[in-house]
Image (cartoon, rainbow, N blue to C red; front, top):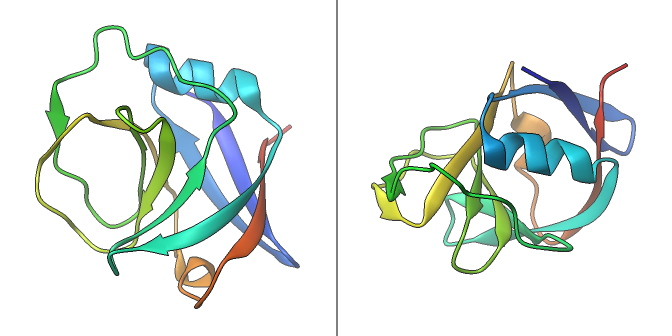
Length: 117
């Protein structure tokens, strides 16, 4: 399992990626500079530079607060700050290790995602 961090200005949020083809493919993209936007008052989303390998991924997933996921049909990253219903095409990549309060701000904002060394 790969440890990653989300850097938002002076704040760092730590997370652990799952040991799955999609999560390993995501880790191979890092570091990434993305812009997070709010979506439906439940998640922050950002476009990824390319689609991820979803080999063997379940057809759907029910996200919980703190889950880092891929919405495969659109190819975007989706970080849930509220639980949501099981959704077809949603693939879990990993989970935050602690508080995600730094993500709960309004508007679009930049984030850098990198592997913890």
